[in-house]
Length: 362
Ligand code: UDP
Image (tube, rainbow, N blue to C red; front, top):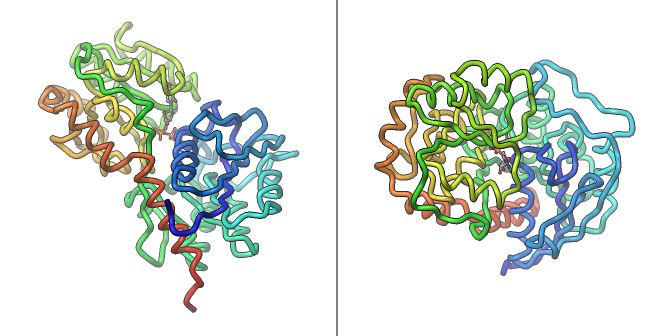
């Protein structure tokens, strides 16, 4: 139980309903944040797109649903793109609603210009858990500006992510958190490799496919196909049967299949803010072979829960796969229990919010 229970309103990304997979890893993060903070005795409300629902672990939270057109995620547009607002946009509706609620704190999980911009202008304290690294120059400026005003309102998932931004102070890094009850440890894997993520170029599936082809093992692929043309190009880049496309599964089904893998390959081309799927695999006992880059470069502890290799080198991934059987699958799970449970995350978030609510020293 925390020192002072807070009334916290969490604003979901304005990309689509929770449960659709449209917001990528942020959807799972939101559920961990909400259920973890509920367990610490706080009062939670979630503002999200119409069509969203919350699982039993979050049932103690009130849900405010708003209609409206979703935002386009800025991660697929050029860095120099303007920020756009659709007609009848969901984002302003969510924020209009959020700012009218009688609460202590608003916690933003969306990566949009509007909430960063309005933070210094409103009475209610708005905090931001930044979900991506730098992908757009308008967002870079908004985050830097807010950091100059009061950096205590910002938290990041990893130090590598935070290093993308122009911050006057050392960043608050909270990692991420997972409900370990949702993941079962599997000690006897099949001769199968796994890859999980949105199927989009920044996730680098082609490199994992090339490594799987080199070692002659099937690569099971789970995730939302965001870019069908890209998926076709990756499929065509390796021999038929190398990739086993399994689609987007809810967590319970995903972890049951993922746990059967010998190893997870994680091959992002961008500065991945965290890498939920890396930790989800470890929670099932699956060692991770990843590029030494971004969040996964901080999560994978070589020799303990996986191996890190030089970025963008599929043959280095293939070499590391020869060594995955040296990893004790129990240690992968244990690392998650110690470093990335939802209880650990909730405690870090609570400290961040409580510190940010103290009067600002001028
Ligand atoms: N995911 C899922 N089912 C799938 C594939 C992926 O629920 O079949 C979820 C996964 O649990 C993770 C998210 O999609 O939470 C991907 O998050 P990550 O942080 O790896 O990347 P992002 O998509 O946010 O860039």
